[in-house]
Image 1 (tube, rainbow, N blue to C red):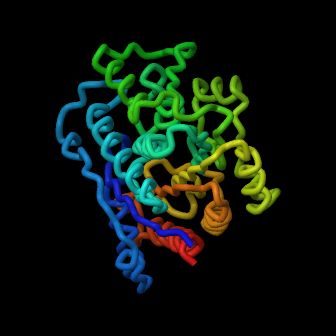
Image 2 (image 1 turned 180 degrees about the vertical axis):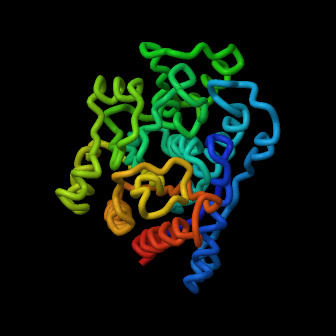
Amino acid sequence: MKNVKFIEVKSEIGAGTRGASMGVDAIKIAALDYGSNMFKQIESVEVKTENQLLFEPTKTTYAKRIAGVLAIYERLANSVSQTLKKSNFPIILAGDHSTAGGTIAGIKMAFPKQRLGVIWIDAHADIHSPYTTPTGNIHGMPIAASLGEDNITNKMNKPDKETVDLWNRLKKVGGISPKITYKDIVYIGVRDVEPEETFLLKKHKVKAFTTAEVKRNGVEKIARDALAHLTHCNLIYVSFDVDSMDSSISKGTGTPVRNGITEKEAGSLCVRLVQNEKVCCFEICEVNPTLDKENLMAENTFEILQKVVSQLTY
């Protein structure tokens, strides 16, 4: 039984589509619709965002609003670190996925000498840098930031000095860089990847399980194999982007992709993973109710969250 604490970070400045900042509240509304008092029972803290930057011109083309993202990284990292140091289990309820780099920084701040494994359940690899990004959206960069990866070999952009300086600071949040290694990453459900990312994944032989493998082998085996791959790690962090689920389930996320896992597979996978004693932090992100009908994605996500919380607290 773990003492769970919610950390809400309603940021969407790392995304290209507006509305992810409303995702956490949409999940809470789903909880009310289900008659759940989970959000009353579990302590929650909210990290201040920088969403006001959405109303200002973007100065840094290849890492949009990176100064704001850096500020959020530092706040979130401190919140995660303090939560872990108090022997609590943080569940991060996030807007866009860019802030995951702050979560990783917080875990490393709390346990600087521990080897951290990452299970990234997502349609995207999120391993771009300002040098390779096709969009400039930082929700495609948190893994690269955590790895300290610039991918200069595949450079196609020329970011200005301000961007480069802020990117280097972003990589070093928490005073440790790199925070993770390629050997310590497991991807599940990734299927929308650019050539620059594919280069890194193949070069470093990053462990990945496709949607087809999940369906063919079943959630139990995928979870077991993912955890086995990280057996040398002291701690494991699980990050669940709702776009890992198939776009047919709901349109309620900024970057839906076909051929994803089902809501049932996602829920079973997350529950199975958090059963492992090394898992120290769980995260859900990218619910966007402005793109949805009848709050369906938030309802699906709440059901998954409820299963995870039940697993951790009982």
